[in-house]
Each structure stands twice: as C-alpha cells, then as structure tokens.
Length: 250
Image (cartoon, rainbow, N blue to C red; front, side, top):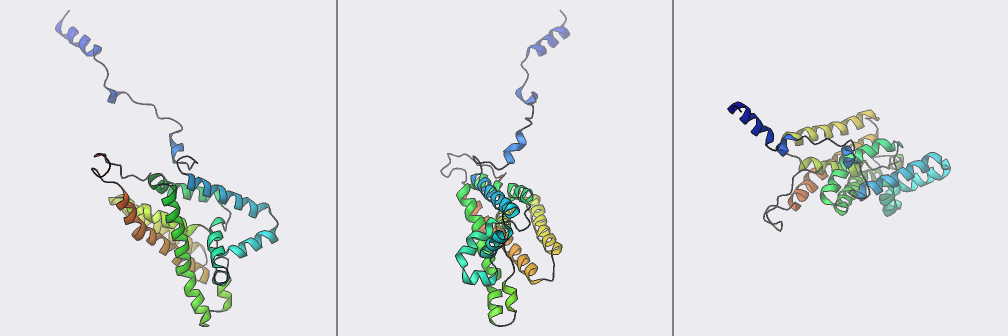
C-alpha cells in the first residue's frame, strides 16, 4: 500500500466532527414564537379574552354591545363617572375587531417580554402603560371641559382598545435591544405611531388624544420599564454560579 493510499484510509476512518453534521431544521421550529398557555400564559389568555369579546361584538345584539362599549369607554365623561370600571374593562375590546392583526402584534410586542421576564412582570408593564397613558391623556380633557375650553361633546367619544398596553411593552423591548437593532426598532415604533395617527382623522380631537397616548405609552415603556427590566437581569457571578443569561428577549 502506498503512503498516499494509507493517508487517505486513515482520514476516512476518522469520526466526522459534530460541527460538520448539519442538523435538519424542524418545520415546526417557528411555532415556538406563537403565544401558548405554557410559555406565555398571559399573552395567550389575553388573546383568548379578546377573541371572545370580538365574537361578542360580531354576533350579539347591537343594542347590548353598544351599551357595553359605552360603559367600558375611557372617554373623559365616563372616566369621571365610573373610573375603575372603565379603566379595567376598556382594554378587553378591539375597536376594529381585527383580532388576527392584534394576535400578530401581541406575538411581536408582548410575548417576547413575557418569555424573558414572566407573566406577572409582563402583565404589570402592560396594564401600567394602559392605565397611565389613559389618565395622562384624558385628565387634561376633563380639565379643559370643566374650564369651558372644550365642549361637553369632547368627553363622549368612544375610547377602548389595547394599544396603550402593547406600545408600553414594545417600548420596553426596544430598550432591551442593543446597537443598530435598537435604533431600527425605535424608528419602526415611532413610524408605526405616526401611521396610525395619519390613517385616522389627524385633525380630530380623538385622534390627537390617541396619538399622545400612544407616544406616552411607548416612551414610558422605553425609559421607565426598559432600564428596570435590564437591571433585573442577573449578571454573571451574582446568584447564578457564574452562568451568563443571554440578552435576547425573543
């Protein structure tokens, strides 16, 4: 046997390195990003509630659903008369009934935060943004109506939805990103807020109030919750046995 043949035989008998073996990608791998009751119970449960109320709006008696929406609205008039009821129930309705669109938004803007920090923390971020953005935008309307700067009709527009909550979680997620990814996400979020405003009646009072609410919610999540969530991530050598937890929130 020649030296060259012996060399080729020895190379053939060596085990193939593990890195050279390509693992087949599972066709179901993308499903791990879909909200489910095990990894994201808050996001999944919330979407189930929104699906139920969406079906209720579509199939129930219009007189009943109209009354329910009026009781849940966080407009200035209703917020003054029944603050707790409106604050708690306004976030269980979708004004345009596009449940599938919101399912995608929740999968992108809420579920990643829940996977990283747990259901309780995700719910706290979500609802704190919903409540504070509502109060920050509607209390000035109350004051202006009381001062007769705005007519009473300005306090009776329908104000329901979940956008303040998911913009708050989205803002917190943007802060947790790093480098260019954070800049791209921030620009995308700001553009999304602008598109929503321009797609409505930009000059209308309700559109302006909603715009301010979206902007406050997003930046509240960005500058208030973002730093606190990052600070809560364990560092190597601190109750972790030197194990470093990945910075990804997906």
